[in-house]
Length: 328
Image (cartoon, rainbow, N blue to C red; front, side):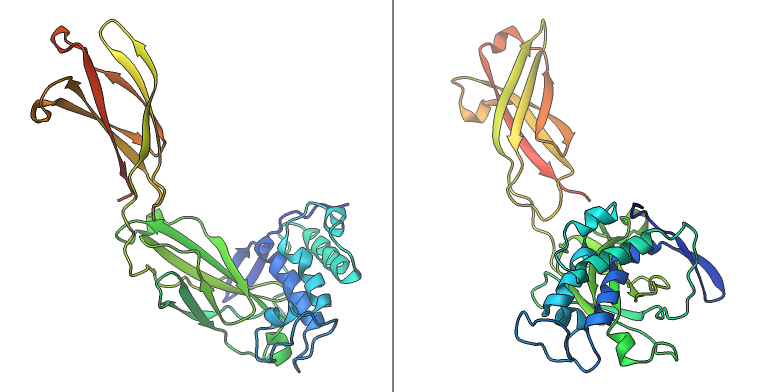
């Protein structure tokens, strides 16, 4: 049986040739196919009802999930498989098995295959971003231009929008630091709320319109977006303990361990360790001598080599302090 291999397809549009990775849209095409089979323009759904029917104005994908047949058809569309047999093993009815056959058919397209753009939807445009009231999510909206081939209600209910995002952590926006594009959501509505975002990060979004025939590609990226609230400072590192200690002729090797803070809005890039020698029985005012410091990457362990110990300072004890640092 053929594996569900990635597909690269070259699509002509706007008088230029662009290579669109159609494997990004395979699952969305599978979902669009299910909507075309089970959701009708008049709002009626085929198959047994799971819950109370949603109004016909609701997004098609939401209404699809209210019926047994359509839900079964969607089941393989959200997963990754290597063979038809593996896909078919999760199925209990024909609706699911037919989706597996459709996925297999798409996977068998040769790399470089250029599907006709006939029947494909236009590239969405006019994307806007708006921070939601509680400052923990962003609402995206976009438009799609009507044309002769796609200006029907049926076609509009048989499409999936694939939303991608990329981000960076920095006080100021710098496109050179942005991550790779990744899929943030799929929806059948012309809007989406993205909740998996955090403060202190810059985001960009783009969207593609996908139907059973494929996609012409992604829209222009949105304007850089950042939540208004600032990230909170990380908590204090906890449970500092001395691990293995090795005495040498003039130095001491000490391994320190600690637990990272319980809460942080941003990933910790490094820790700073401070240590000094302390004389026993001395007033706190004169307790600390020269302070040393060392920075380590965002791990919870550090090995230190302490300076030579003078005879006049024996017996001594060591005082440690661990401080966190987040990306700037």
